[in-house]
Length: 108
Image (cartoon, rainbow, N blue to C red; front, side):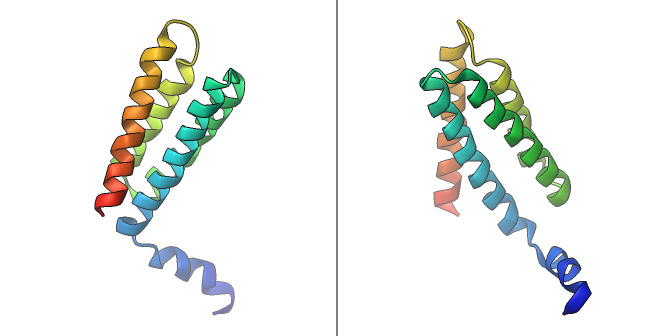
């Protein structure tokens, strides 16, 4: 294998496998953000969500996935709506995405 090994691994990545795997990790991160926010740790929750946006965007580019890109946009919106009156409605949206992604994982 040698020096070509990383390139071979990259070429062998199957988007049909990797996109759901990325989505699962992002969903777990989103659940962590909700838990942090529920504990009043707003900035920590925002950091997790912003990191998740970067993770989802990078993998959306890598695997040419509009689904990951959309989830990244949703996480960005989540990060902007962690405070005040917006939080309760935003929490419902976040939990809805999480449940939808959990269901998709189980049905695959």
